[in-house]
Every structure is written in C-alpha cells, then in structure tokens.
Length: 205
Image (tube, rainbow, N blue to C red; front, top):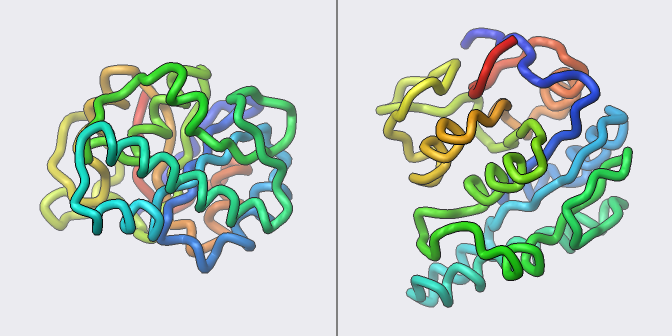
C-alpha cells in the first residue's frame, strides 16, 4: 500500500462521510475530527439502519427516503458523542453533523434507486457546497476486481462503493480521499495534510 499525497486544500471546508460500518469507532472518529480544527460537515452513512430498509425488500422512491431517514438515525447516534446537529448544509467554522433528510427532500437531487447510497449522497453535498470530500470506510483502499487502487481517475468496477459514486465524482471533478476510519491516526493525519494510506480522487495539486 502506498502513502497518498494530501489532496485537500488547506482551509477549505470538508464534507466527511462516516460509513455505517464504523459505528464501533464513532466516538474516536468524532473526537479526532474535533481535534483537527477543520471546518466540516459530518454526513452519517446508513449502516444497520439502511440494512433494515433492505430487509423489507422495498425499492424505488419508498426505499430511497426510508434509507435516508436511516442515515439520520445513525446521525443521531453519532451526535451522542458530542457533535452539534444541523439540518442545513452550511459551514460554521467548526465540525457539525448534518442530518440530510429535510434538505434532500426539498432538493431531491438524485435517482431513487439502491445504486445511490450515502456514498453518492455525500458526493452530491460536496459538489453542492464546493467542498472537498473525505470518505471514511472500514477498508484501507478501494478495490477494483480485488486489486487496491491509489487513485480513481476513470470508471472502475468495485463493490466498495455504490455504482453511481465514481461516475458522479468524475463528472463533477470532486476532490478527496477514501481512507480507513478504524484508524483514528490516519484520519488525524489526513486532516492535517500528512500522507496516509487510502484512495484519492479528483484534480490533484
């Protein structure tokens, strides 16, 4: 695994997506984000709450809004670690946790399909806000046909992201990284601009 050069522009606000699989590490992740001093909006994944929607065998519009409501359940859980909650995607100079349901209902920006999960929703918010994107998952790098990749510069097939995420970040030139959130030191280093293991995407400077 190669160490990645930092791709975020220092001082630029961030959207930070916290994957649902990282629930056991939520307290450390939120604490690490606060210590970084970065102006950030934390977007919760779906995790067990979205999985509960899948178990209903619901799809289309109903499943779309149920799953986003599931993201909010995870968000409220993460808020218990001391992070302020907001429904408005506005940067305030400090980390806040964004509950996305209300804003997504008002804008309805994405297809109503299981091809869209919190991955692409986080990319949409980053594009909408002109922010960089940090995606925290429980894997070291995105894998294309089982092979870890350092940089997403074209469409690749992977089971580690929803099907619309890569086309979306490529079409909208979104900058960011995907790293393993189970290692708080990696999250801390990435937020400070230090090299970490992960997968980068977007224009490089």
